[in-house]
Image (cartoon, rainbow over all chains, first blue to last red; front, top):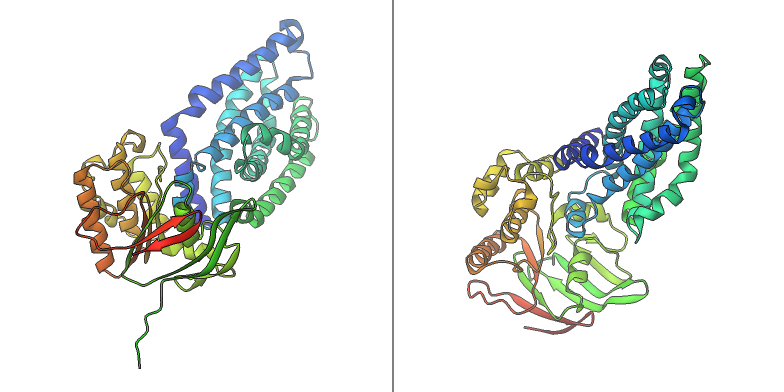
Length: 219
Length: 218
């Protein structure tokens, strides 16, 4: 399972590095969305507003949805799907590999958006650094849940529009916990409680994915 | 006493439904190891559905069947998929990976030594494109790449969905020679085509499908 996971993860990251969809399409979109949030708040209010963490995660959600669809679409051309199916890869390994690749991409994006929120939303740099561990876990949990829901919706028509509708209820607790921990970091509160909740969610979604990904692929 | 050979493919009244619509209806088919079978028929006749059934990519809705000794109803279809080689008429690869990267992925997934990649590419005449990104290959080169994928896999059953599409005469001749080699080695080859094979090198059994049923065979 681990061997398959590393193989699939390396393949997905190589595809991303060569296609540069993340670099030239997803990241600019995320930065522009963050910039619009900063403009909407206005320069006078941005630094004093408590909306920074929420806006950071709102933009992260939009970016994550694009990346989840992208992660699934590389597998779904009919010929590729059939050829790869005949390799007989362990579905749990495929799930973990795709999740790890997506998490890696989200971590890169998250760090850039975090820096962007310091610059554009005037979020405290110290708070942003303190929030980093919880951001990493939140994005990992989003990647795992996203891979699961991406597989669920990718078989049908209109997968790109179906994904947000179905996945949002699963993402909401993660985003709320992520936002609360980010806010706690900014206001020197206890972030470890939220970090723990997010870690438990990450483990639960991973376990569900390991058990169900094969069934989702078959369906 | 007769020395009966166990068929690689044994379908009895096989039915495949998709959303209640029959893609295959009551197909009986037995194929022996080391045989070449061509499935022909008009568009929508059920050629691809039959190949997908044999590959374990679609479920058997009714009837019975075994492929490579694996029951299509209750057997391990994942194991079956590992034992068949599939060449689809669409692209079979990750377009953004190079030829080498695609084949390395397949070889590692199947625990094959990486040296086999260069051997297979030499055999299909694609060694000079090993570091080319797959989406930059011509349709004919992509077919050759798909063949090299199968050569690395060395499956016992080769399922080729319209393999002659987009091939020029030279490539068709090469393809025929390779299929003849594969059949001689004892593998079962099933391929779909719109028409009967023009090749004189191959003497296949030809099955004509129509409306998901076997209409005739020769």
